[in-house]
Structure formats: C-alpha cells, structure tokens
Length: 602
Image (cartoon, rainbow, N blue to C red; front, side):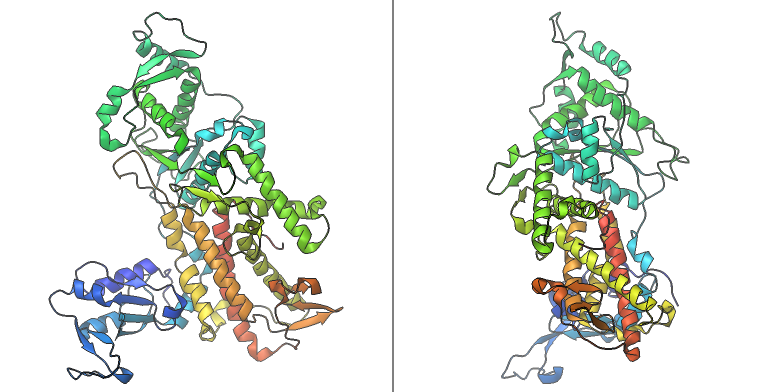
C-alpha cells in the first residue's frame, strides 16, 4: 500500500492536469450539504470557459437524469455538461503521488462532480496520523528570518492594545516559521523583568538579555555623517544631530511604499542602540538555532529576510529606522519588509486608554467569574485551577487578537460572552472541546483498565468502512486532510513582492481551530463514541463526564445510554476513536502554533 501522505493540493493538481492544458477549474467542497454527494467540483461555467473549442457542451435531462434532447420538458430540466468520454475516464482513473483515490466522476447540473473512495482515504490518513500534523512542504535549507517587534522595548504598563497585537502576531509567526523549518531570530531581546513576566503570562516565547549591544561603531559612522549638518549648534543630551533621508526615499521610488513626508531623522543614542542590536542579531546567529545553518554559505545579510512587525501608529518611525540603517551601515540587509498591524478598537469604550496588562486582568477576572458561576465557590484561590484560568485567559486574548487578518482593523467586544464555552467563536470554546477530547480518551483508558473494553487493536486491523457518518467525513476531509497545507500557507512570507510591506495569514490557524471545534462538537453531541455508560451514586456518568443536576443545560448532560458493553460495536468504536485521535493531534498542533497547551479539563 502507498505510504505517501495524501494531499488536497496534489489531488486538485492531478484533476486539473487530467483535463489537459489550461487553467485550474476544480474546487474542493467544504459544505456539509455538498459533501453528501461530491468531494470536488468542476463548475459548469468554468469548464465551458476552459474548453472554448466546444468539447464541453450542454444537454437537458429529465427525471432520473435521462437526456431529453431538443424536446422541451414541461417541468424543470437541469442542464448537464457534456464531457468527452475519454476525459471522464481519465478523471475516474487519476493517480499519482499524494493523489486521493477516486470513486466516480459524473456530470451534474452544477458541473463535473467527483467523489473519492472514502474508506480508502480514511485508511490512508488514519494509518499515518502524525504525518498530517506537519507542514506539507518544509522550507529550504538555511532559510533565515529576523523578526523585529519594537513594541517590546517599552514597559508592560505602557503597552497599548495595538502593540500587544504586534507581539502576539510576531510570536505566532515565529512558531509557524519554525514549524516549517525556517531559522528564526527574535529582536529585541527583552531586558525589563516586568515585561518578561508579562510575556510569560501571555505564553509568548521571547528571548531575554541583560545588557545592550555596543553601538560604538555605529556612533562613529553617525558622527561622520552628521559633522556638516550640526552647524555648531548645541544639542540636547542623547541627541547626536539630524540626518537627511530625503535622498534615500527618492532613490527607493514611490513604489517602494515609504512615506513621502520622510525628510529629516533625529539621530539619538537610543536609535543607534536599536540599530546595533539589529546588526548584531543579523551577523551572529546562534550555531544551534537551526540544524542546517552551520553549513550555510552566506551567514551575512544576503540570505536573511528582516521583518519589522509594527502597529500602524508606529509605521512612520519604523520607516525612519529602516532608512537610517541603510544610511549608516554599508552591509545593511537587502531585504527589509514591514508587517503593519491595523488599529485595535474596543466596542463602547476608549480602547486606546486600556493597556495590555489591564486587558489581561480584565479577561482573567471574567474567566474566574464564569467558572465560579458554573462550579460554585471561588476557584481562583485553588492552586489546581490557577493554571487553567491562566490558559483560558490567554486563549481568549489570542483568539481575539489573531482571528482577524493582522492588516485589518480589529474590534474587541469586552462582554462576558467572549469567554463563554457556549459561544462558537472564542478561544474558550476551542479549549473546552480540547478538554472534551481528553476526557473521552481518559474515560476509555479507565474503562479498559476495568475490563469493560479490550485494548486498542493495531491500526492495520481496523475496518475503516465502518466510518460512514457525514460528520466523520467532514472532520477528515475539512480538517485532518488539509491541515498540512494550512500549516505551510501560514508560514508563507512573500519577500519577492515589490514594495516595503508584506502580508501574512496569521488568522488562518485560529479560524481553522474554531471551525474544527464546531464540527467536532456537532459530531460528538450527536454520535455515541464509547460502547458503555454507567450510573454511580446518583450522578450520571457518560463517557467519562460527570454531570450534576444544575448543569443540565451544559453539553455534558447529553442523553445517557445505560447499557452493558456491546462487543459487536467495538469495531466501530475503535475506528471512531482513531478518527478522534487524529482530530486531537491536529488540535494540539494548532494550539502549539499559538503557544497554548492542551487542557484535560475545564
């Protein structure tokens, strides 16, 4: 049996190639109602546009799809594409590395509909679960990115929400790039101990430093440039003089994206210290920072991309720093890009007045309050819950900050509904379903130890044809199968595009995890996974969930089936558990991209 990982991109590429030369026409279906009958579609109009030589025509079909020819049908007569038989045969037999096996391909009113051999796809994917939790295409050897987040030079009490957004975007982008095999260095190294503590609360992995980089060489270069510009005037302490940047802006051209109002730059000791740290980080990469870096031939500036992650309010100042670097340093990086994050607005409140630590404390208080209402008592003082409340607070913040494309304006709603497990858009909802998965597998483990279930059999012995529920295919086809491609797209940095600015898709992981949690929750609420439920001491226990009477409105109060183990259903139970193992692996990997640990209970 073939062992190469199946891929959505590989399958789409093979389907388009089977139609001959021309642009792509096939699309992957995602909606439940479409997946009931097809997995891929070549829309009717797209086929006609591609085959403008008349190879693809139309016909009208009556009941049961029989062709009516020129005779008008008195009722609705769907239009079917007429595709040459050799093309249909080629599509039905398409094969190749990473290409999913095809079951059938037939013309429908929507176009050419193609359905995969779902049992075979289940078997291929679920027999190699770990392979679908890694990026589809690793980065080239020795690729390096220096991420610069100027907001981290301030103290936490001065960190605005728009600056917090840049920190979270930079941290998430660094994790995505490293998972993709890119060597990443983060600047600045944080010296403020209060900022380090706050970053640890936010579960942001950022380097620390005890002292500044030396700016002596840069200061000498700056003084040479500024000698004729000071005109003998006395300057304030810490200010070396002014430097004209107009020529550099004109050299770059209007298409570069620099602000045309950039003219003079006030050169200060602090600015030179920032440049010295950037230059030091650019030239001295840790030897153990990447396995392929030691053998890379260019360890200077040529093979490195510098990305400045800044808020829109700081963009003007960052452009000055960019140009000053080019002006003062002969070997400044050739590739500098600016990732500009949009403003953050708080609905119904002056968001610019709320600092990042105040925002964290606000969300943390909401999480503690919601848990007290659900479980009773003040759990915030319980050490066993302290870690959980911290993770839930950070999850809420990161999903709020990262679910919108970083270039767009972000609106925050501070209502309590943002931290509810019943809402389907929050980080709390994702963490809640992560805990449900953990409880499910813990329940199976405990029941197995009690002799209720046999040990999990080898995956090769599972009968994957028992997975025929539409929710099961939705989880595999929309979440597990495309996840490697999603990881790769998250780490894409288009450094070849003209201009100063660069766009990234850091919102994709959050949106993906929310949709995965919704699909899993819908499936789990409807389908019984384990084959036994019991009742102990008047408290219901179904698949490991204890439910009290006052929690009847909670999802864990799902209907109980009080029954003994049913061995004839064990086969179906095992394949469903294997499917949910893959869901858990994907979910945990996605959370790791956000710096969030999986929770076993909430």
